[in-house]
Amino acid sequence: MASTAGATRRPYRDEAHAINARDVHFDFATVPMHYIPGEALATHIVNVMHLLLPEGERAMAQALAESLPYIDDERLREEVTGFVGQETMHAATHEAARTHLRSIGLDVDSYIGAIGWAVDRILGDHGLTGRAKEEWLKERLGLFAGMEHYTAVFGEWLLNAEVLEQKGMHPAMLDLVRWHGAEEVEHRSVVYDAFMHVDGSYARKARTALVASATLLPLFVLSAAYMYRKDPSPDKGRFWGWQFVSATRRKVIPSWTTFFTEIPRYLRPGFHPSQLGPMDTALRYLAHSPAARAAQ
Image (cartoon, rainbow, N blue to C red; front, side, top):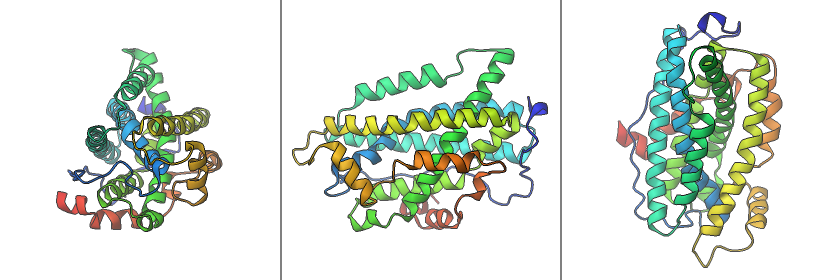
């Protein structure tokens, strides 16, 4: 498959930065149900990371691992391997947060099971062989490249959202989401470059980006609403829809319009994820994150 890769593949031989997994650990023992004080719905928007990402990141890591035999650029192979390690660590860490939230009363096991089943059914390898296997791998890489664009954009937002400190977000959860956001920025190019290497079709890139955007937005909103309904706290406030609008207006959560405004940038000819915001902020955070420093 590598022989048919698009002409826009990006060589990695001159890259100095290496992607590596960090063996981080977080102490969730004192994390309350609403760890962004007074912001029940905003807390559950963040909880979507703990609910959805472990399942999606496993599927993404599987697809990237399957792509390795088709990648003949040794530097890109190293980055893909590092990416798989980081995504595996993300999934494990969010599962630990999910376990803690379950222990204090947020029962979402049935929903998590449904999400896991759907991800396996939709984004698994389906046991295909030959040309069908290759085409389905290309399609999954295109989808994941589109999704990773949004995780990088939201990672930037998390790193710069001073409002989270101002609201008194629990430090363990704040470190968790910022560490994750920083690594999303750090490896923002890897899935895109893997897709371009094994395929590079603009038509597939455009189609899968639109599917990714149209899927992620309702999934995030509906999942947050589900967790709000399952929240047993008597002080969770007004109707979740109004809280969503209010939190967005006050910039406590990213704007849902991002799922539309980012499409033109991603689909612009000549776009590459390295054109997003500077990586310095992410690398500085990873150098000072309590959990990342402890891992060193």
